[in-house]
Length: 213
Image (cartoon, rainbow, N blue to C red; front, top):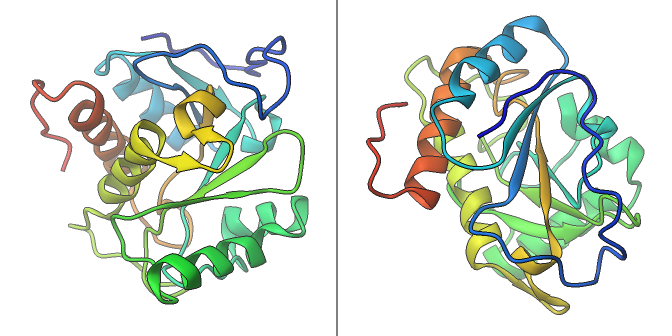
């Protein structure tokens, strides 16, 4: 595990976003925070996980990555928080998410599941939508486990998912992740960070204890 602050430049020699990338047991995960509380929470838990994990103090859009994470709602609307930022940056992505949710989940993506769709850009080429709330703008309770469920869905999508171009893990080397539910959802940054670490350990280090919830 590596934790660092500042701009994370990633790996710029990986070639096309559609070319297979070196196979690794885990993705490179960049935990992004635009505020000090979340950055501190990410840094605190970073040393509790095994793998290539970094902390970036700044926008998720600044990270060189093949995929970004959307802490969405179950219907794929991208009108608030970081989702609105994505929708402005990638004009086709909201429709791509909603189409995937309709095609594969009947119009409602359950919390604990994720879809991966093209952004319409060369990089990041992909967006992983993993809902932290059912309804847009929903305030989450203090005892929510939705960040854990969303993060677990993201990591499982990377580990097991397939696209027409090949396995997700062959196409996505680096994932940039903002806070999950820490904006509109009102989840405490420390709670989010612990739950993301617990999800990582469950998917990539299944023998480790999961006490983040």
